[in-house]
Length: 398
Image (cartoon, rainbow, N blue to C red; front, top):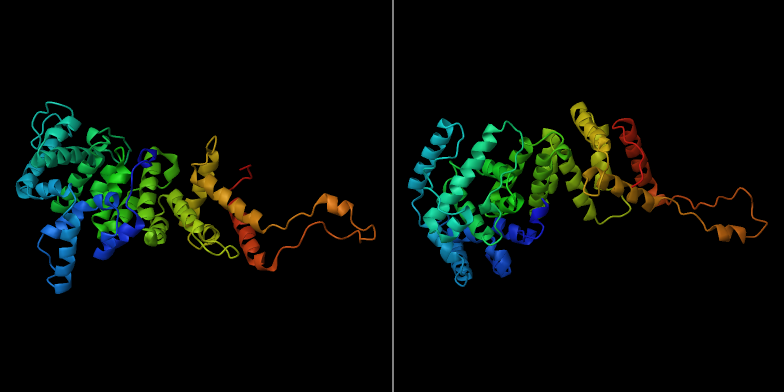
């Protein structure tokens, strides 16, 4: 999702602070970082807490102090003041109307006839109408997803594309999902966001404001995902979105990779998460996680997993031209770099020519493999044999 690269995402530090409700760390965030978490923090400050302890009372005071100087808080407070029961009833009626009309969007109970485009309507609307505009648009996308039978589509929507109102639209989205969870299950909302521009950014903000939903959202997206993710636009967008989520919460990345193998979906995501983890590994001499992971898939006892990953390798090679954005290309390059890093070095030809003529003729011009690299070399050799023999990997110039 290249459209998201210029947007600011929630940092791992901020996400961890939200997970642990660490008010001290939250107070250390910059204003742009804090802005992304306002929907949850405002609800936390205003809603009656289940925790009645003295420590939480002190933390709540700190949160209120933290929010006191933020201008955007007022608009979120206004969003929370809406009658959500009435809104949910109208939304249910609209869903029934959509089903009756076969998914048609000509009539809407939530939103009366629009005088302008969605962006202008959103700009000129008060809080109740903003909630209705976003809810109507979101329900339309969710309805289309449920009727698409797994076929991917891209939905152009002004509300999710206008750079001026992205943060305000995200506020509305987070409040709607938090206040209407039965109408808007978070996994269904996440699935719908894959079909709009900037969907990964909206998804990360939504999960950051409901941090306990991280594993649920990831598992849902993987379960609904494609068996081979690099073969379609939908698969690539799903993989990119999950990769952004794991960058936000890196401590759970390997658990998400486990979900990928368990479901036998999105093999490119499994490799991409492994590559990200490999970059952060400290040891340079040991066998890397990438070698262990791919070897485990191809040489393990699970024939279903072996076939699934072998298909990923074969399909990747059938594409006319692999680019640096291809996960398979990145995997091959990383394995090649690891191999080159332990190969014996060749002595200079000039040194050999100038050497003493009494040198024994059977002396090799190659230095020996270092002892600390023997295990890694064996693992790489084993892996390359598996890649070529089981997955049908062919030699190519990277």
